[in-house]
Image 1 (tube, rainbow, N blue to C red):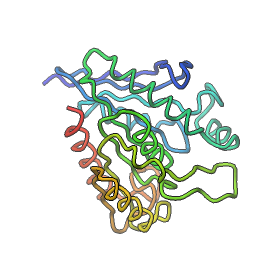
Image 2: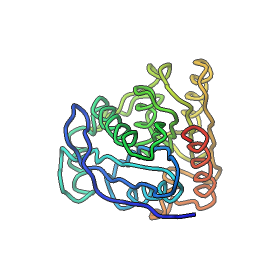
Image 3: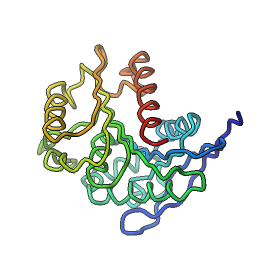
Length: 246
């Protein structure tokens, strides 16, 4: 089987039709491919999340990662752009939804698209993945340890995302959740609250919590990395998207 991909920086139409930078990785295998919008973590549009985007292409998907901080700091280094965005209160929810919608439109417009699009996010992107799935017509979503889904962030500091519990009823697609049992944001109790609400709303979901893992257990560059949990998590992610995007 021919195995190749095309990875490159592109421009997509984000919230309000505004042109923003994004990173695209497309599989060049024969046949139609599902699409995945990758939402980067709070540290920003960085090399690690670009690698995640390419990983989807390696596994037969098309993927795109919008640069959520493009407006605050176009062309800046990821750390500088993230600091600027945090100082301004983070990415507004409405704008995030518009940028993900632009990413989904880009993926659906590719010549090899199945027309089906999912979303995935890590850390702050995990919450934003749930937000997008409750706000847009998507076919699958993955939340990797997203905090502040079930409760508001503390009032201290400029970054204060609000609880998504009022809109869980609007979840448009099946949700996979991957969490660390030793995490505090979200804690196991937070995960249980979200699961109970999904049950109450009759939503399709599958949650897994890994013993001995805390926050950011997928991140290979941090001490928090847990290879066994991450390896199992990746297989669940690929299986989830193959099930709902093929």
